[in-house]
Image (tube, rainbow, N blue to C red):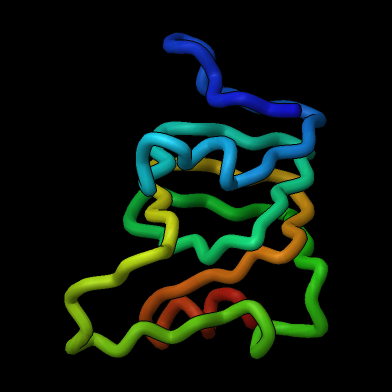
Length: 110
């Protein structure tokens, strides 16, 4: 069972990561690296700068199932997990959605 990494160690490898365990005291994940992990929700991640998602897969039938569009006029979001300066590499996402502007949907589709 993964716990938030101690200061100085901001990397998870080959682990099962439950988003709820990382967001007990804050709704923001910042400066973390996830390598070959299974990222488990339920959760909706809201990338906000410096986020890289490479060679990952989603336990979902397609982009329409995971993407939650946030219209540009909406300025406040409650209940999502903000992700900043994080890297996800070779991870599998289970019961995890992604929220963002329409431009993000096109990135997920590629």
